[in-house]
Length: 193
Image (tube, rainbow, N blue to C red; front, side, top):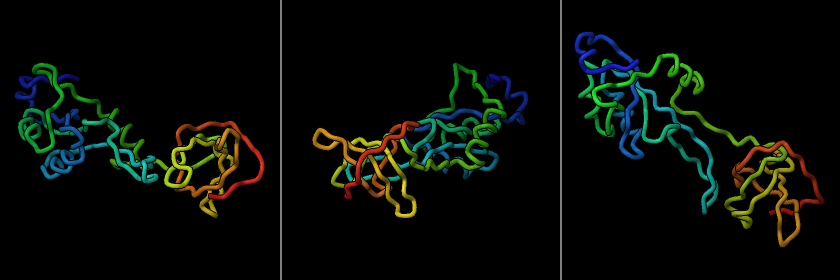
């Protein structure tokens, strides 16, 4: 449904979900500020996951829709208040038309996130997963998981070293999944790092 300001002036009580554009990398700031305003419901879906860096794998939180979040409010009554909130760049619009987002779309997104704004992606390693090793002597090497050893917090991977494949055991926290793959490989005895 698309609303214009003229439509909402007649029906001030009509509330709907709208898409807001935030200032760059300020989705969380806009969401926090909007939550302070009575009569506005916010949904800012974010993913928390491990990513490889030069100093090893670190947890990062990123917006599912960079620079965008969703707000449920009365357009006619609260438009100015919402668009001038710190962290908000604008309410997405086309001329004087403000497209609303159907409730079932937001409800589906919220159910996929378990009713929270934040979803944590765990790196449950499986045989055949392609990984990047971080934070050890083999930092930056690409490898394939041969076996996960959760009790020891280790993982056995196949990595190419000096032109030949070698089996290496590394700390499970020092690998970041690049691609899930069902292929299973096995070679020789392990080398420990």
